[in-house]
Image (cartoon, rainbow, N blue to C red; front, side, top):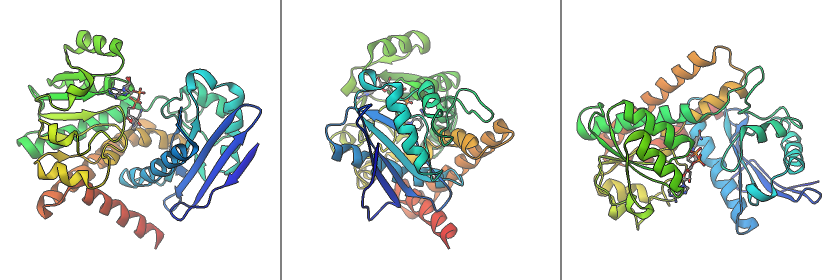
Length: 349
Ligand code: NAD
């Protein structure tokens, strides 16, 4: 196996990983270990090129630095990607090779589940390295983070509702949800319990049918989710969906969801603010999952209480960001960026 350093002006360490025997090609990106060991999931996708895979790893690992800082965790930011279709080329041999690459980072990078990975894949990695979280069993196993991620997003939705409508209560509020996977589905459950009405979409028709039956949700076509009249939009599928094409279509007062990197570019936060749409920064709103994973990385005793306290602190952080943004007349994304930059600088000093 070849583990080759990739030069980077922005990241502490970046590696290209190749194992000819198993067909593994991937990247490990460690953006920052200022706050602690870099932690962030492993994503497997059929990227168009090595450049695209590397760019994704660099961008996502930087996002993890911000997410971990916003969640008040003693963890830095890292991420890893494997090139290829997980449904066809993912084998135990490929995962073992990747596990050896993670192990070679000697704990400076901890991996976990992300798109294209499952808890059983994490168990395969764990055969080669202890630096893996999101396991289904074991002393500090934290399991599926999605329910905690959804709880954090639900809290963020209540916060934006409070700011835009004067009440956090969601009874009768309409929430449009893009993506009904692990996070979106759990979120729909919480919203329904809270009395909200749902408008949903997903590329998987079976998920949409299930949501209409389970949550009495109204289904719309994929591209129609942007223009539907609703109170709050919750993107829970892919990144880059808030952009100069979609933002003019939005018919909501706030956006708060779970997808990573929702803004196509930083200036899209300004476009949202100009339209009077309050944006809950994604790396704060979706921090619940990494809080759950952190209990495994940091070997926290009394996991349930610890997670509950961290979720309350995350909610307080979101409130402080939204309040400050309103006071200064700037976008919450800019304030959130400032908050995490200060946290990291204080720790580095
Ligand atoms: P998932 O793969 O379980 O679900 C994603 C869902 O989105 C799937 O049902 C898929 O069919 C659907 N989808 C994909 N492209 C779509 C599109 N263009 N339009 C509509 N639907 C589409 O993933 P997940 O774990 O639910 O994560 C969702 C998002 O939240 C991702 O961006 C992920 O990175 C982010 N996130 C997840 C967690 C977690 O705990 N799982 C934590 C933080 C952030």
